[in-house]
Amino acid sequence: AWTHGDPRKVIYPTDSRGQFCGQQGTPNEGLVPSHTNPPPLSMSSSPTQICVSKCPDRYLTYLGAYSSRTPSELEYYRQFCVPEFKNPQKAPIEVLKDKECPAMIIPSTPLARRCFPAIRAKKGVIMVGNETTYDDGRGRRRNVTELLEGAKKANVVLETRQLAMKIFEDYTVSWYWIIIGLVIAMVASLIFIVLLRFLAGIMVWVMIVMVILVLGYGIFHCYLEYAKLKGEAGSDVSLKDLGFQTDLRVYLHLRQTWLAFMIILCIVEVVIILLLIFLRKRILIAIALIKEASRAIGHIMMSLLFPLCTFFLLCLCIAYWASTAVFLSTSNEAIYKVFNETACQFSGQTCKPETFNTSNVTKLCPDAQCLFAFYGGETAYHKYLIVLQFFNVFMFFWLANFVIALGQVTLAGAFASYYWAFKKPDDMPAFPLFSAFGRALRYHTGSLAFGSLILAIVQVIRVTLEYLDHRLKAADNKFAKFLLSCLKCCFWCLEKFIKFLNRNAYIMIAIYGTNFCTSARNAFFLLMRNIIRVAVLDKVTDFLFFLGKLLIVGSVG
Image (cartoon, rainbow, N blue to C red; front, side, top):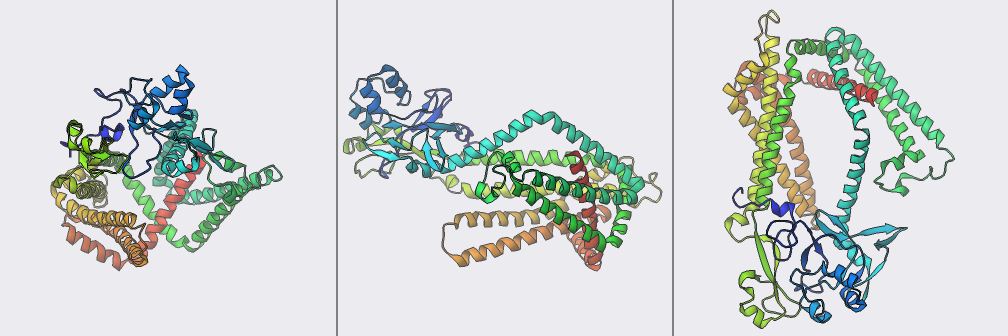
């Protein structure tokens, strides 16, 4: 992959000759390609792709530009012709026949260094520029809806990019408030952890009351906004009628939005109160666990920063996987094929631009051209690129799961040294976290790799099922779709179970030093003997920490 790949194929567009736009040694350096010919009338013809300085901003046909005899219009049109076109006095029919210039150009929008029709909707009418029809350069008027299918995906991407730009603009305006909020949240979280060590019971109950009060204020605020918008013009429009809007602030002017917020907050408030009523005894046990965990963190403060190390290693895994995937996807060679307007026995066959003009094809089919078609290849390496991509994904899952497992064993080993210390902190290692990290790498690498391998296999199977589901979307086989949905659901559950079992197996590895299979078996039977208590306490503790996060986020917001 690193030998055959060329990332320029992803970054830079390619013209009809297979040359990169904006690269040294290519025509029109630093420019973008433009699909400026009309749609192909048959499978044998292909629109020429050329590199241009900017996308067209007006409707214009070559016949119109040539007939007007206006130097400015003809000069403007020439920038969308092939670089070899040097004779503006040449008969238009010959220019179009030789495909030196496009028959027509339309207003276009740049996207990913390519030009796409600038399609927009105005009062329910599809338009390109300010027109609903266009001249196709052959004397016929066409409706712009014919361009809609070809540019549909591009316009979805364009609208998504516009939404992302609006979000980015909001960040640029309020970035300092965001940083201040993050700093306040971080300081509040640290204070919260420190206070939990000494005042766990009081802090948890205060936190619960504060969450209920914050949600109550949210309900009251939503009601005030809902009442304030009563009678205002446009506030009674339903969310369904409004549809999706890239400017999210529009929704804040609708009464239905605030009503939905109020209902959601009411449901959350009622659910939290009911859970507190039925789980009050379990909450007391969870408070004791939280208090002991806070003491352990107080003796191992580096554990708060260790997740940054895991995050850094995961970033390295993602970077290696992404770069390898790009090189694999760009390992294909440029394939050139014969394109022509009239019937030809060589149509669609591969060709070589270097020898095409001297071949028999040009003699038998004078209007044939050897143009770039796509990237591909006939070797075994090119045929099995999809297999190599799946192997790359598998290795990414394996490495990522290994990094996560290493972090879990390290933290488990550090806290195990605290738990088993008879006299704390005198009987603990000087650096418990680094000691646990060293033990994990020295003694437990194989166990971590094996546990990560099992999880990676399940995850690759899930990716394969998603790939098959994508390929079978157009198929009308209901049984196959049903079977695929069942398999996806089963493997999703299996992945969740293996993640849960692996996490507890890693804890047993860190404590007792046994291999993965023994640790997984012991962890499984230990959990089964205390399944109800483990499930309830685990979820109650998660619920209490969720309330803490909700309180900090709500207060900062």
